[in-house]
Length: 158
Image (cartoon, rainbow, N blue to C red):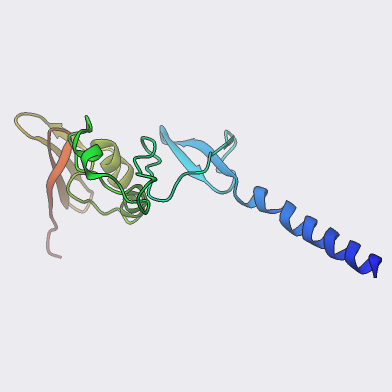
């Protein structure tokens, strides 16, 4: 009976020993930008230690969660922030970037991650980023105070 219990303990220890390796995060550089992955993403991959984040926290600027009330974000803390752009949940922001989708309030760094480097930039009261493609299509992104306010595109008919 002791041998069976010992086997169960060994199996449990082996099974749980693999969990930390599965949750590793790696940081690499790709096209001049930091990239994070759950697998080594290149020759320059560095393992990143991540401290646990409370649900609802922001990985981009630290947590802004009220731990006293159901884990909801405090609106007054967001309103007093020095950021001009509206808050976009970091999980949603990652999804938008992966899908190459823009939303109002994105910052220029977010647009670069989603669409890449613009072909040209015009500045004035608003800033316009232009993307021109070989098929003569174009996309334009408009910023005010460092936040996306609008975007559109021109797609020639075949």
